[in-house]
Amino acid sequence: MAGDHPVSRAQKGLWILDRFHPGSPAYAVPLLHRIEGEPDVAALEWSLSEVVRRHEVLRTVFRLRAGAPRQTVRPAEPVRIPVLDVSAHPDPAAEAERLASAEVRRPFDLAADPMIRALLIRQGPRRHLLCLTLHHIACDGWSVQILQRELSAGYRAFGKGTEALPEPPAEQYVAFATRQAERLADLSGHPALDHWRRRLADVPAPATVPGDRPRPPVWDFSGAHVRFDVDPSAAERAGLLARACRATPYAVFLAAFALVAAARRGCPEAVIGSPVTHRRTEGHHRMIGMFVNTVVQRIAVPPEATFRDLVLGARDESRSALAHGELPFETVVDELNPVRDPGFNPLYQLMLTYQEGGPAGLELPGCSVTTEYGDTATAKHDLSLSLTRAEGRCTGRLEYSTKLFEEATARRISEEFRAVLTAGVGDPRRTVGELRRTVAEPARPLG
Image (cartoon, rainbow, N blue to C red):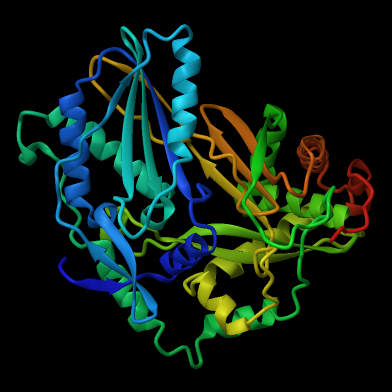
């Protein structure tokens, strides 16, 4: 689509963050594909070229025009995948990991670069590592599923022509962004805005848990993460409790995380953000683009409440937030005008995500492929808890700011979450006051 166009509100927020933190890989979306076999590089290049041709957002650049960011779609061009051969290195596997880490942390220039790049590392006969890195300004979790499916279809269709590919999306992301800009031009009397004013007007700043060190004056995204497994019986009981409460497992996990956060803060509530997707039409579901919004939830954690009560409260709060989630978080911030501080995110500093199923796999006939997300060594928030249920397991990943927390503290928080969850779903009649005994005593917030 020729010319320049409005950006969506989510894109504008990411663009502003990039201006304040140029070169940060915090909003890179890195996919690592470990390939056993000999991939056809020409087929991979053709397939990736077709994905980029079909989805304009992947060849869009973002530039300042008349004081505001605008997006411009570039013409489609063949994509080349550089191949690095490390098979002669004394330790090919270690060298491949080093190169992959450097690749996923390599910055994007939003004004000049494509929003997707690829690198293939050859470790030896039948061992390869394919790195695909996207920028979040052009994609979300659903987009990754589309990318993987279409790359797989294109690889199979190589040499057969584009008629062997799935139907292209009916419209492009710029159309969504343009319509959103039109809808948000006048917010007077918007019911969602009234809701957020009521819920978030007096949110404390910051509404987080105490760290080990004073908060730096400017957030710099330095981060790390710890991984853990949720006990299988606890995960199963969480599902049972969710059904008994006519809720989802997310509400159970939100209740447990809120209890840990409130206990560590020494107060009877927790403020937690969560991502929600707003793909409203069938066309949106076939389109790569940034459709995720963040909603902020205030969870009451009174000491006399039972864990079941907490789940019911989390269920109602998350449903209400989702019902009013069509208003972009960036617009909510603009309208509420909360405390702005370069040292922390406005309105919330704790994040919870839950998904069922990991990233869709890449299917390359003749090869075995394992897909995982790469590590950018960053933290977008003070603490971000991500839970994934896939292949009969429930796993957790706690991302934390290394400027605020020691690794040992992050591990303790993950252990407290598991302990609260296990005890709460084991006997939902237990009170918050009882369950708080598994959490560290609140410390005086620093900085």
